[in-house]
Image (tube, rainbow, N blue to C red; front, side):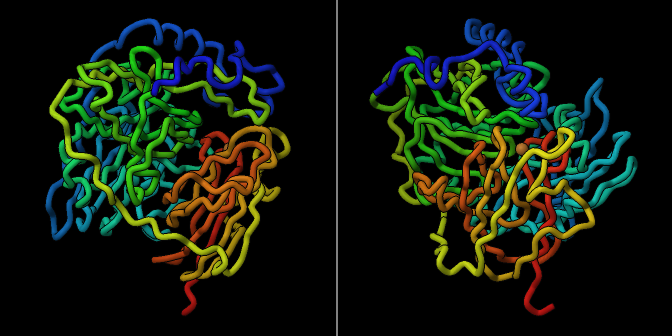
Length: 465
Ligand SMILES: [Cu+2]
C-alpha cells in the first residue's frame, strides 16, 4: 500500500545550515545542506525529466595472454577530469572467473591513483597508500572469484586530493556478472546502472540531471552506486501519487544478498551500493511513471538541515507480461559468529584540531601502522562516532557484516564495505581477515573527511611470517 507523499517524511526541512553546523560538518559537500541545492531541487521536482538516461560506455577489453585487458587513463576534460574522456568513467564489466588486467595511466597534472572500491583484491593489488605522479602508470590484475558478482566502482585514492578529483569527474562503475544474473526472474529484467555523482548543486544520474529511464521490461533492476564525494543518500521509488513502491533488494555493497529482501528505501553513504528490483507488478497494472527519489535526510545527529525530497530519475515502466518471480536464492552471506572473534577492537571517529578529522584521536600518517591483525582470524570492530555528523566507515580489502547498530541487529545479513555511522552511534562489525595479508587502510568515505585526516593504516599479518 502506498503510504502517501514522502516529502513530509523526516524532520521539517530548513532553508540551510547554521554557521555552527557548517563548522561542525567541516566540509562543503555534505548532502542536502546547501541553500542552492534546495533551489535546484524544487526545479527538478516540478519539471519533468530533462532527457533520456545516458547509457554509460563500456570500457573496451581485449583478450590478451589469458586475461581481459583494458586501460583507464585519467586526464583533463574541459575544466574537469575524466577517465577515458567520459564522466562518469566507462563501465568495467567482467564475469566471475575472468582474469582482469587493468592498466591505469595518470595524465592529470596532480598525483592520482586507481582504487577498485569493494572488489575482492588484496592490499598488494589495491596499493591504497601508493600515489602516481603525473605521467606515471601501473597495472592491476585480479580474478573475479565465484560468488563476487555485484556492483563495484573505481575512483582516485590520492590522499589529500580525493574530494577534488572525485568532484572533477573521476569515478566509474565496475560490474561483476555471475550465474544468478541468468536465473529466471532476473534475466528478464531491464538491468540498469544508476551512477550518482554531484556536480556543483546538482546530483547527476549517469552524468545527467533528472533523466528518464524508459524501461524495456515490466521489471527493472537498478544498480545504485553512490559515487558522490560526500552525500549520504536515502533512496526510494515513488509512484505518480507520491506513494512509495516496494523494492526488492538484491545486493548490498559487496555482492548479492541470500534472497531478495522487501524494503521501502535504501540508505547509501558515499561509496555505497545497492541493487534493487522494482516491478510494474500485478498490484499496479498498466504503464506508469515512477520516480527514484532522494528522501529528506540529515547528516547531523540532531536531525537538522535535511532538504526536501528530490527526484533523481524518472522511470517509465511498461505494462508487460507477468514475469517469473524473483529467484528465491541469490548469493551466500554466511553468518559470522562474534563469539569466535579473537578480539573486539574499538575505533573512534571524531573531529580534530584546526578543522581536521581523526581516527582514535590521530590524523592519518602514511608511515604509522595504527592496527595489526592476523590473517585467518575474525575480529569484532566497534566503530564509535563521537562526532556530530555521519561518518561512513570504509575498510579496504576485507568485507564486513554489521552485527548491530547501537545494539539493534540489521534487518538482514549483508556483505558491506562502506557502513554509515551516525553521530553518537556505535556500529559493531564482524570483520573476517580472509584471503590475503598486507598493509591497507580504513577511513571515512566522505572524501573531505578522509583528505583532512580521518584515515588509518591496518596491517594484516600472516601467521607464517
Ligand atoms: Cu567522515
